[in-house]
Length: 190
Image (tube, rainbow, N blue to C red):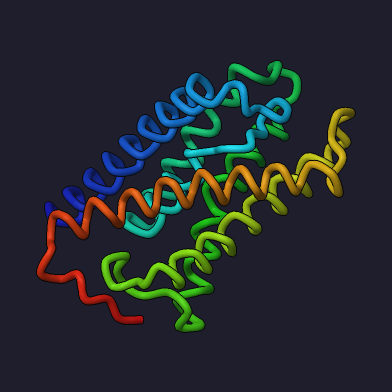
């Protein structure tokens, strides 16, 4: 019983920590890369996408739940109270899309169990898949709610590019840091 309560507490703490970190990265990205904003919610460089991938790869479901909570917090400031369904579903898409993609890639054997054991090429492939899934799922959701400023066929590309660039910057930076911390494990295999 005590073990399950401790586990639940740890998972909850990881989810809330993920949410806070995601919100902070979102705000940092909005501040640093404001000139690269394509439209509201879409930037040509979106660092939180890389953080989204890292949280899901490292923490799994608690990271995904944290992303969902963080997105709900961010969207709470962007949407009015009468449009609760779009922000709710946007949070679900934001958190669960990378988790579902990760599960699918692991099931297919396309994803190494640890980021340290991934080659640069495999990291690029994984990033492109995560970025495409995120951009497509968000754009489809927004078009479903017929947001007047949304054009899926046009907006999906800047979102994909921003997600990919942000994720690549974050993931390669993360991998670079990990390789420097553990230089004896720098021989990478797929």
